Image 1 (cartoon, rainbow, N blue to C red):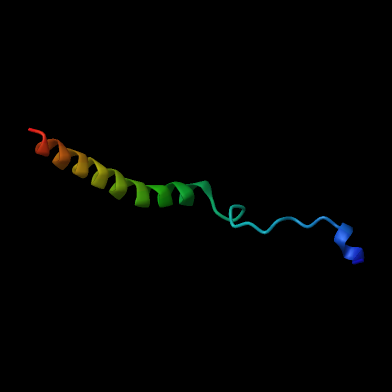
Image 2: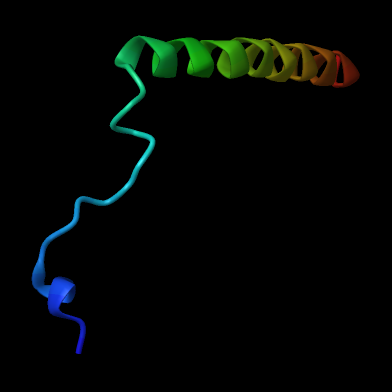
Amino acid sequence: MNPQSNSPTPPATTADTSSGGSVVLAWLVVGLPLAWGVSQTFIKALALFK
């Protein structure tokens, strides 16, 4: 058995190194064009039913 297996090691995650601002910015970069595309698709789909 490994004697070092009893020592706790912190999990290596990238969430610890990213700031909240960069996460918000990343969501805006993805979310705004996505929301625009969905709204344009909805508007054009409504025109089919007129």
